[in-house]
Image 1: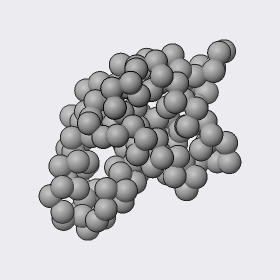
Image 2 (image 1 turned 90 degrees about the vertical axis):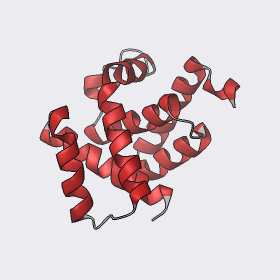
Image 3 (image 1 turned 135 degrees about the horizontal axis):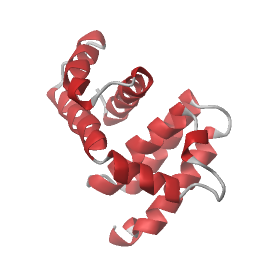
Image 4 (image 1 turned 120 degrees about the vertical axis):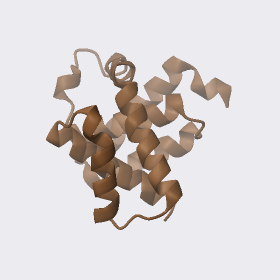
Length: 142
């Protein structure tokens, strides 16, 4: 299983948790169930998914604040579709809290947006993430 496939499965799981309004205490159990359902048995996939989902939950307020600050003026985060907000949470977490190259994260987020979002999702995701990268100065660190 490739990193891209693992990231996409992580997005699907995160979206499912968002829709079901799961509490953080239930995440690990849901992750295990999801891994069994998807027949994921690679340790690196399990580790990535668990660390990422729990990392997003742990840093949720900071992640949402970063996203909110980088939306177009007059846009409220509540207006962003569940698919887009879930994808932005995942990508923002990866950009800010991991060592993954931001260009890879943005590219894969846009590809997931093409598959799961509407026609405007890829450009929207790309724009918000570009603003986050600029605001945080992450591009200067690489």
